[in-house]
Length: 123
Image 1: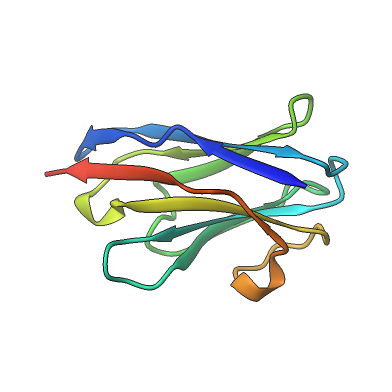
Image 2: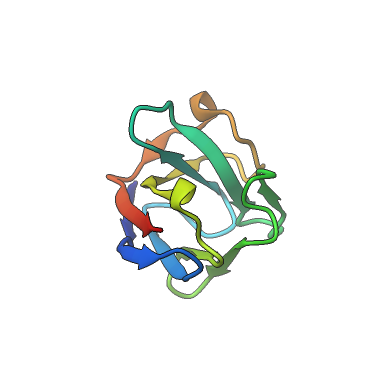
């Protein structure tokens, strides 16, 4: 199983970015993808997740209404659309996969992790 994130960049506050998580080694419908982030000097936190089985999603309150998850079945890719970005969204963003297509934000329940992509939001 291999996860590759992309799309991180420097953006001004109020701007938008779309992160991608390309998944290989899983059959679509058999896993859940979580997005986590780690800001400088802080612990990693879970912010959103999606089930590839039924498309159910979860969003942490701090990103709800600004971030949206979607999935591309044909390309086995999950996207995190981030709008109205704030300086406090600055972090390394990671996607992770678990072999059960049920959403969760507990890190220990994820089996595979990507390398991370840096998002920097300037004020």
